Amino acid sequence: MPQKTNLVTSQWLHEHIEQPNIVVLYTQMDNPVTAKTDDCPVVYIPKSMFFDFENVFRDSHSSLPHTMPDETSFTKGVCELGINQDSVIIIYDNKGIYCAPRVWWMFKSMGHQHVYILNGGLPNWLAQNMPTVPAISMTPAASSPISSKSTSSEFTLPELTFLKKAGNFTARFDNDYFLSADEIIQQLSELTLLDARSAGRFNGTQPEPRKGLRAGHVPTAVSLPFQQCLNGTQLKSSAQLQEIFSEAALTPGNFLVFSCGSGVTACILALAATEAGYKKLAVYDGSWSEWGARNDLPVEL
Image (cartoon, rainbow, N blue to C red; front, side):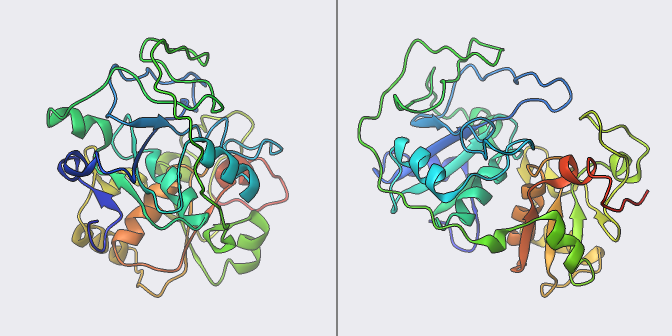
């Protein structure tokens, strides 16, 4: 595997994809403004399985969007995908670097270290004319499959490759990967909270895409829109990311917590900080979907 990075290139994946322990996970998310599913890709990377973090791998008892599930349900769902303890997981999405880091962070928090993100995602894979398949693979017990022809939440897929053997993956959740709102309030003076939303949403000059949320940001938070960490569809280099974080007066010893609208693009910042050499990191899972809805929590503009 590539050393000292959580990313793999399209060329690397192409060269290693046939190894039996390589698992390729595709993910995408609904548009938070329209609540409509993104148009599904026409083709996929070979061996791809759909990782549905919005509907399957989430806390079904939470009113918040796609919050973390418990160890038991995560283990069950991952085993149904045929994933093992020694699997090397490569994650990609349909935009490049967007929601794949969320799935990467989920696996890291559940104790799986051999997990990587395809830098540039499907757009980069296609740009390099890599081989593709017309459908993703699914297990019979997994969520509804995703179709390249469907644009609704009811996915249909005529051609599926069923995986019959369950995996032996066992999740071991590490609480240090996530903070709750109450923990942030208690530790606000000891951490640096970086907000991945746009500057307009951070300052309250741009409306929130989700209804019923207050405008503004968590007191003391620092605005770092996730797009600043990207070069097109790919993550910027480690050197560039180090410069971005140092410009915010941050040093590798800082305790960094990342927030966004619902805990997804916050994980882009978590990935960027990891690539820049930061170690003490956490994601606020509820993010602004929770903080902006709770009148008992303070807000700044």
